Amino acid sequence: MSDHKHAHDHGHGHDDHGHGHGHHDDHDHGSLGSYATGFILSVILTAIPFWLVMGKVFASSSTAAFVLLALGAVQIVVHMIYFLHMNSKSEGGWNMLALLFTVMMVVIAMSGSIWVMYHLNHNMMPGMTEATHAM
View 1 (tube, rainbow, N blue to C red):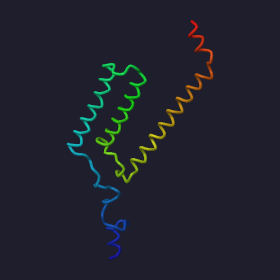
View 2 (spheres, rainbow, N blue to C red; view 1 turned 90 degrees about the horizontal axis):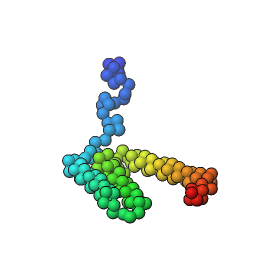
View 3 (cartoon, rainbow, N blue to C red; view 1 turned 90 degrees about the vertical axis):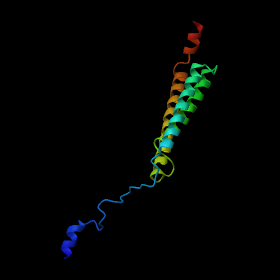
View 4 (cartoon, helix red, strand yellow; view 1 turned 60 degrees about the vertical axis):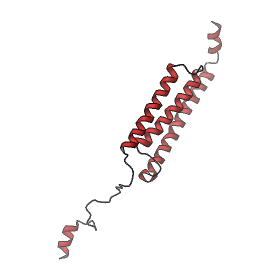
């Protein structure tokens, strides 16, 4: 009789056949309302930068660039929340931890690259700025 029981058990020790292996259905997959909200916010956050650039709202291009970067960052957050459904509770917090690690690595890589390029330009070609202005 015990051989018959082991034939059906397949050595798993339980009889659920793959159910309940880390699959949680308690997180939000979004609704039509949340997708519509995300879409409307995305359209607004796309239209504003077009208006700022085409209307030449800012006299300084560096000010316009910072405002556009800020609006782009806000739009990334909107996409992550409304379309990718990322929050601090999804996947037990691992999604947020992976996002923070990715943001940290991108900031380090970009700021390091800008720092290296600035110092290469400043230290390797010190006479170039005066030579070009003299012409």
